[in-house]
Length: 330
Image 1 (cartoon, rainbow, N blue to C red):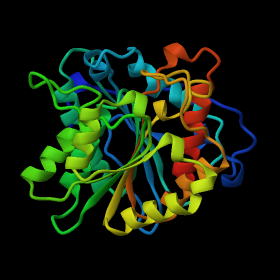
Image 2: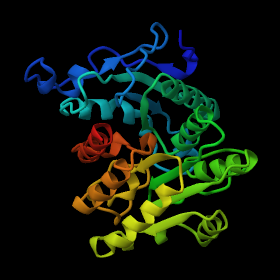
Image 3: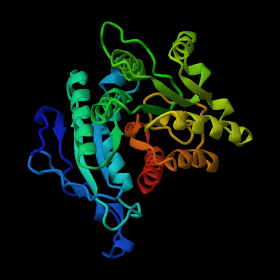
Image 4: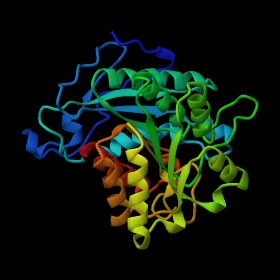
């Protein structure tokens, strides 16, 4: 039996996944028909069939990091609303592949660090059983626990490259020993140094008006690579794809994380820290995303900072669903 701490776990209840039914044959199925929910308090994780691309959905229902960071709370409700937005998506996985929902790691108190540890354990377990995790936040404190789970799974001879679509570096140093939604990648860098591993970090969509000079200095000191939002356009396509390709080639695995606040508030209002400007989910963006997917090096992925309390017309939910569809479909 897979061990999870009941204080930090909630299974996906029956009826959460809903949608239209066009038929029951595999070619007609939608996510709500195909996905298999697993209650980790009562069931074993099924061993994934070898040779297939199997996906495990994990929710991270936490916004304690956002609260500590002074952002708009509510991202803890993101995983539930994300599932509701994805039920009608069509299935384009191989018929033999498994697509499972492992429920949520939850944080209902201030014990965020413990929740991050639980997330790391579940990500590591999903990878062990042959799944590619898709983790849904929750605030971007999701990053540290997610990375730790990947790091615990791989051997010491391989390297992890982090590609982060984000308006922010999230390289703040924890104050008073407390992590926030803005400290995750600094903590990962410290962890890499302690383990004598390289810190490979590429950020796409950085906004100058959202990052202090100190954060730019930290990014330089840590040898992080970044592409500003103002340069992320078709005019610079070849330069951007070349930079992304060079980064990917230098890594054994890619941990892909998408912070929804990288997008302009007009298309993604339901986030913890909205920006009036930012990237647009246009054909160029999805070309870049597909370029990363096509590398076949993504070991695990997440979508962070979805805050349904500020998304009355479900605009952000639909965007998150579109991103997830591309990530799962591959």
